[in-house]
Image (cartoon, rainbow, N blue to C red; front, side, top):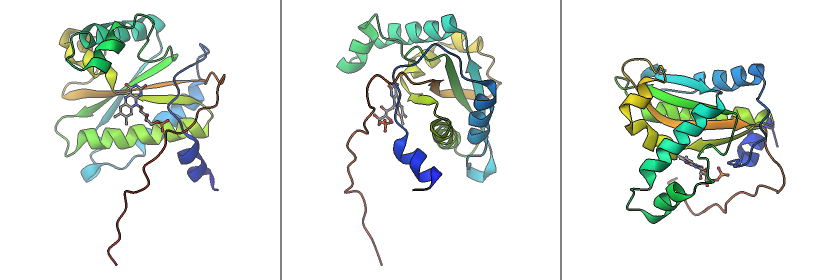
Length: 184
Ligand SMILES: Cc1cc2nc3c(=O)[nH]c(=O)nc-3n(C[C@H](O)[C@H](O)[C@H](O)COP(=O)(O)O)c2cc1C
């Protein structure tokens, strides 16, 4: 299989990280891969906030979890109540991906950028996971003001990056393959 197909097939959501920081040159390549994603109307509406401060990442996780405890949805509430859980799995790098609200399709475009980054990370043997649960943190206006996100941009998702702890084989959740119909 070629390299691209290998990265697509082998990428897994990684939920255990070594504390060692990833190399700046690898981070640059991962962000560049995000920047090379397709975007509606070629708006390129993304912005990346790279957080490499353990305390700030922990704070984002704690604040998100505080709000999650108020959720009506049991599994979300339970994660909020789990004092040991860090939503970024103690990864040394957390990237917050924000989109320009005036673009044609900013959230879709940012999602394409994120997927490119996850695949680039895999190709560099760096672990990653897309983090939706920190959207709880994004509800806290005073908090997001501190992140230096440009005016007119809205934070959508987080991406955790770091070297994988490989104490168990990461297996792909079973895929439902019955999702295609053909018209010929
Ligand atoms: C929009 C989105 C949000 C996600 N949010 C989280 C999250 O907050 N925490 C987490 O551990 N995984 C999160 N994931 C990862 C999924 O759980 C994961 O992709 C899925 O279980 C399939 O596993 P795989 O990535 O190893 O193929 C998210 C994925 C997407 C696309």
